[in-house]
Amino acid sequence: MEGAEYRSLVVVPKTSDVTNIEGLRGRIAAINKPHSQSGYNALRRLIADYVHMRVADDGDIPDLCGGHAYFAKVITTGSHQSSLEALAKSKANVAAIDAVSFHLIGQENPALTDAVRLLTLTLPAPGLHLITAHWRPDDELQTLREALVDCLGDPKLRPALDAMCITGFHFLDREAYAPVLEMERRAEDMGYPVLR
Image (cartoon, rainbow, N blue to C red; front, side, top):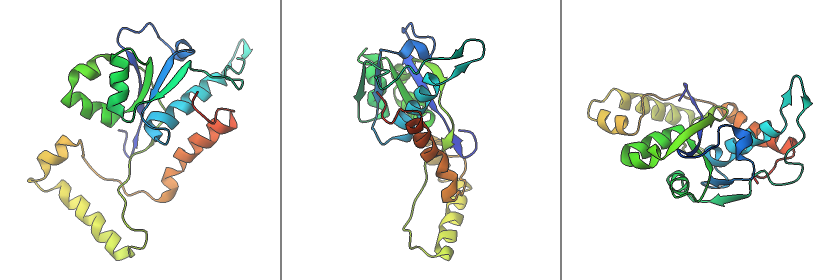
């Protein structure tokens, strides 16, 4: 986590011969869910950026998607842990796992996170939000925010907060989440509306 933002870790099996994004072409990608920012949208944007990048001396790299699939296959696993399991069992070659989930999974199942290695990081995005009813009055919203801050100083709650890796809260407005939609729009603009 970087303040209120986080990144996804793009990981490959520890034994993989892949050393860069180009090495992923024609491989199998594992995603947790198609509507996931950390496991899908961030990876799609990374691939879209790669296939459209420019090399200073060589001019344009051809559009490697060109309406065609970048990956041989994209499998949906249902969870970040299941995506890591797919990598560990050689059912997939790459997955994007949000950094907090990766850390928490590693605490419970270090063999699973030890079975992969970091290839790269995705672009940063605002962290997951806590939500309440849209009709809640401003004074109640302020009370809820103050209660969250009070939790941080409660010694009885410290073990639970530490277990969840919660060290603070940031209060963001809706506009702070615009980069998530912009990642999606930018990938679509580059001709990569679906991770494939």
